[in-house]
Structures are given as structure tokens and as C-alpha cells.
Length: 483
Ligand code: NBP
Image (cartoon, rainbow, N blue to C red):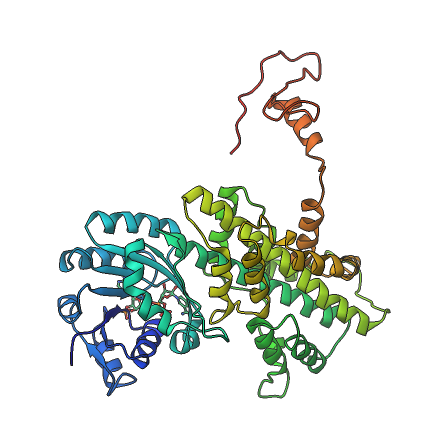
């Protein structure tokens, strides 16, 4: 067999499927895995008879690659990535590329890009989304790193990526160093938000409206045929119809304690670092944390009582209200996600293409949806759009959903239904559209107790004042700075 177009290390679920995807697009792939038996198992199993070269050492892997060599890691994020980089550097030559396709934290990718480039090599840190199925049939791929590496990996990445209906691949260059992993991280954060919003509408349907699983299945089916069409609505539709062996809905038997692997938390930490109010994803992460306190909640439920949910309005109308509330909240969540990316681009010096990012998420990944096509259009119409909420399409959508959204949030809260994401979205909307927030009082409080100073509405920005509020303080003010 001739030499391989690319090498891949890490034959777990993602690695194996990516290799098969690459091979099916005409690329020869050399593979290696720390536990080398897995190489033989793969080459003699799912990889049998295909243009896949099994190798038993990194030396053998590197020797089987066309130059400039491209080696992709699909291993557990963290130390294994650093370990493989150390082992590969002495085996590679200037101009070769190391690619990390795992869920690495973007600061690690910033560090590794610099380190690998200092050794004369090129580096790519790329988000790969879509799970097992996506890896095999077409994931969304979000590469960042050394710009010179992009042309080298582009033909392979764009060939194996998911395609939107006109054939455009869900993969394009994101930006320097950690930009690709940053965008993948925000994708995962948005996924947390979308999932929490769907869960809240389910809880309202079940506990307030008293709908059956069949009714809820039908509603999600209908929603998936309209503007909410998305992978997550589609799988929710199917989950609600899925019966356990005894004929009962399986989802009713699943323990209500959510897990998380950290990418949502990273997104929220990044938002705190950048000073961007990413409230919906924040609530979605905390919602999982609250759910995980299962035993404590069960105990609290015997002591802390609230209203018994009761609905006597027009159910059909309220279900339409719910649909609109979900859509409006989703707009807020994505608006916040793009606010975070815009700020990160400034903080880290990335030149992000927001329409391109929406397109990468349009297919192949977990948050794929018709909605992302609209976001792409919004940024195509105005690449400098300061906020998605100000785009004419989304503005009209959110304004026309407003009444329904307020009805859903107020009714759920009156009935004691937990809706952290739906309500924070509406609260963000009311804060964002308010030209005067009560932060004037807050600044007064800060100045009162800590001489933190304030600016005045009747003086230019940047002039700071301190008042001796009690008559007992001095005239010295604290240094003015923002963290
Ligand atoms: P895992 O995250 O389970 O990683 C398994 C691979 O890492 C195996 O090749 C394993 O080698 C290797 N590995 C481990 Br574990 N510890 C190692 C160490 N200390 N040194 C060297 N190699 C080590 O596999 P995955 O689920 O296919 O995910 C791969 C990457 O893709 C991860 O970063 C993951 O977060 C990301 N990702 C996963 C998904 C998904 O749906 N699963 C989706 C998108 C992205 P061994 O065989 O010798 O143990």
C-alpha cells in the first residue's frame, strides 16, 4: 500500500469512525493506539480490506506518512495530548502538522500551538462535533491553530465534514491558536442551553398542562416540522415515544441527576473572564448541578412546599405560547454565545467569521438546526452585526413572541415550576433593552462603603466622583479599575 495521507492516533469511538470516514472519501490512513492490540483488532475488524495501515509504534506510523506529514490525535483530552506531542516532536520534520481533534480546553491549545510552532512544526486544535454517528458520516469540524496548516488539512477535513443542503461543508478555518477549540467549547455551552430549555418546556407540559407522553411526542413532532426544526427537538420527539419493556415511557424511569464533562463549565468561566453576561448557559450548567443534588432535593421536597400546579386556560393556545417562548429564549442564548465569541476574538486577537461559525454548526453537530441557517443569513447581511437581537429577522421574531414568552414565564413561576433558563432569557432581554438599569444605585452603594467612585450622567464618561455620604469619611477615593 502506498503511504498514507494522514495518521490517526487513538482508536476509541471517535478515532475509529473518523478513520473510516476519511477512508471512505478516498484517503489512506495510518493508525496507531497506545494499547496496540486495538490497532490489530481494528485493522482486522471494521477496517478490514480498506486503505488503512495498522502500525505498532509511533516510528512506524510516522514512516508511513506522505510529507508534509499530518498526525491527528483523537485521545482523551489533557495529559495524553501533551504526552503524544512530546513523543511526536522528535520524529517529525519542519512543516509537518500535529492535529488535536479531542475536546481540549482552549488555553491548552493556545499553549500547545506556541510550543509546537517553536519546534518548527505546525499545529491544529480542532473541535469535532457530532458524536459517533457524526464522526462516521460527517461531523462538524472547527479547526484553529497555525494558519499555514489549514491548506494542508483542508482537503481532508472538508471532504469528511457534514454538508449543508447546497453541499457546503460544515468545516472552515476558525482562527489562530485556540480559536477552534474555543468555538467548539461555545458550541457545547449552547448545547447545554438548548437542552435545558427543551427540558423546561417538557416539565411545563407534563406538570402544569398534564399532557400524556403521546401528546408531548406529537407536539415535538410538530415543532420539528417548523422553525424549531433541529436535532435536539428531533431526538426529544423520539425519546418521548420510547417505551421500556413494560410498555411505560423509558424516560420516566431515568434518574433525574444530570452529568457533565466540563465544557459547559469552561464556557461559563470564559464568560466571567470576558465580562459577558452568558446567563442562559450559566443557568443551564447550574441546573445540572442542582439536579445532581438528588438526595438533598428529595429531602427538601418533604419540607419546602409550593403551589400545586393548576392550569385552567386554553391548552392549545398555551402550547403555542410555549413554542414561542422556547424560540425566543433560544435567540437570547445564541445572542449571548455570539457576544462571548466577539469579546474573545478581541481578547485573544482572533479574526472570527461569525456567519462561517453558524454555517459550521448548521449540520453534523448536536446543535444543528434550521435556526442556524437564519443566524448565518443575519451575519451575511451584516458581518459587523453587534448583537443577534438587533438583526431585523430576530428582532421581529422576539418582539412577536414577547407576549407568549411572558405568559409562559409568569404562569410557570406562579405555579411553582422550575424554569431557570426560560426565565433568565426573558430577564436578559428586559435588561438588554433597558437604557437605564438600577446600577446607578449600585454605584452609589459602592462609593458609600468603599469610596469606589462613580461617573455622572451630566458629565463626560471617564470622570470619576466620590461623595462623602455620611459626612464622617475623608476625601480619598479608591483606585478606579474594573476586573
Ligand atoms: P476517549 O476520550 O475515551 O479516549 C480514548 C483514547 O485515549 C484511547 O485511544 C486511549 O488509549 C487514549 N488514552 C487514554 Br483514555 N489515556 C491515555 C494516556 N494516558 N496516554 C495515551 N493515550 C491515552 O475516546 P473518544 O470518546 O473517542 O474521544 C476522543 C476525543 O474526542 C476526546 O478528547 C473526547 O473528549 C473527544 N470527543 C468525543 C466525543 C464523543 O462523543 N465520544 C465527541 C466529540 C469529541 P487506550 O486505548 O490505550 O486506552
